[in-house]
Length: 264
Image 1 (cartoon, rainbow, N blue to C red):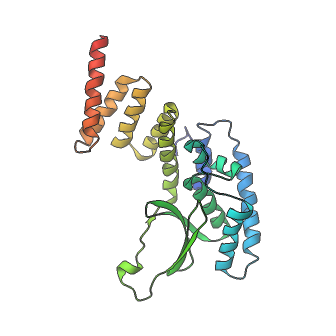
Image 2 (tube, one colour; image 1 turned 90 degrees about the horizontal axis):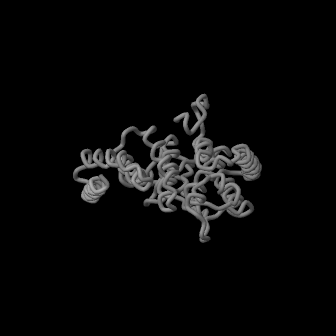
Image 3 (cartoon, rainbow, N blue to C red; image 1 turned 60 degrees about the vertical axis):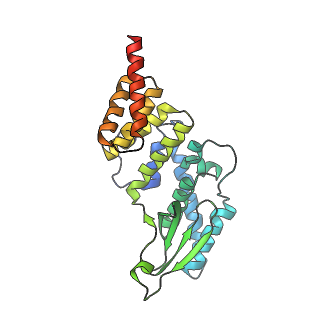
């Protein structure tokens, strides 16, 4: 992790949810990390108590999920709340509502710390919680509604029937996913400086990616930094000449050149 976003001597083995909470402070410095961590500790302690009151894994899982969406009242929302807030884990912990990403991160952390084999995956284009019960069976949980789907793989099924039909998300990629979500949320809210910080952080993690350079060029143009924006656009056009966005970017470059010549 970059020491711009996380402390220079931070523990190398951060949990993804802790890393996301640390990153949040870059755009909301007033965020008190200790409050969120204390809340997580309280949730985990209660979940462990509940899970131990059941005789088997299936019932324990149901008990913890009922606790999460029942007594704790975590849920999505239809209210007009900025997406950048709903994505933020500290906000979801404080107000018990959030985006599918924030709720997935919290539920996954609680389940993992309670002893379940839980992970965040992509199924049919949506983030879901995958709880592994055995090599052959498990549950998918919708992080917004709490709806559970049980599956079992046929013992003598074909490779297609027994293969995973969902996409695993490595834990290290969850922070990238979080910052990527925040980037687009900030762009939609016209918070261009915050979106630019997200792009720069992603570029530190993944390198000189042409698509991040394209997004940085767009944001720099919005912030009237036209010379640097031009460099980013030209880089994208040279690296991705067949991309459908290239024609639009080329048009913007011509527009910027015309404006530059007109001013001088």
